[in-house]
Length: 410
Image (tube, rainbow, N blue to C red; front, side):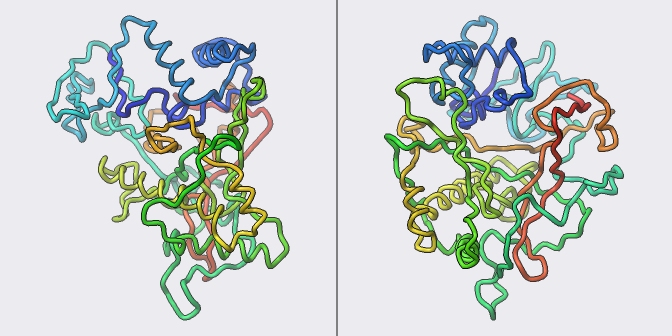
């Protein structure tokens, strides 16, 4: 088996991405077998505990992945290696992939690999899916597309702006603040936005590296966040925080270890999820962008996340007590020192969606053959736009249900 990994890391979001397998900890996922359980228990042995550690130190989790891969003699792992970009990278004959062109980061030479059995495109971007001419879609369909009442753009969001806030630089200006679009939207419409990307930053209270301003930091880029904070302070409302400190699942079993936190899932409409930044500067979606365009999108999201974290620990608009709380934590010094302690893997939630002969629709939610942690996966925080001359944000479906079973295609 030839295993190609474009980055210098294995594990995807589970190790270089900073998430681990945290959703395995949810009460409605009961598993004591399979690869994910083995990974959690191997992590546990390294800490000398009996319970699976779903979110270990990220470098340790990657080490566990490498150990597991090394035990299979038929797996040939190549890091910093990928498929030749574009349709030229895949040779198809009679709807079957016969060859793929392989390139490394150190050479532009193409090595053609003949496919003996099958190809699994387990990437976030689905480049082989596209290059082999498989049908796919991205973004969100309109409510009319499949007659789904919850399809397309909605007029609400889980985290809406609680008070009217002007999206313009000044009262007599039509210049928009950073991270606000002027797109025209209607409820039920389709669009090509994706679920907001981010970086799952690993933070801690002890032995941390303080948040610092990213290169070319401009505090005016975060003026919308500043206005939001001021509106909540003026109203005497508890601040909507840009991220939550999610405790690492499994660390509660460890003795003499400082807790690590996964920065995610805040309550603010200007949170750590980079709403609207899934498009390149020329309006091309990450889903169909070139690799160079995707790299620029990732760089802009990195600036946004780093800038937001620095903003909340340094800007005078943030109440002193809240600033002090954010200054009491920082980037984990023992994580990704080669990348300035910042996760190297962009949190890509969804990109291309392959279209099969059978699709799952809203009307089919009564079919019960599989169990999962969520009834529906929210496509929220997609972008901020202007609604009646005030800033607000849009989302797509976000429905939850207790122990809901759904049917889907894999």
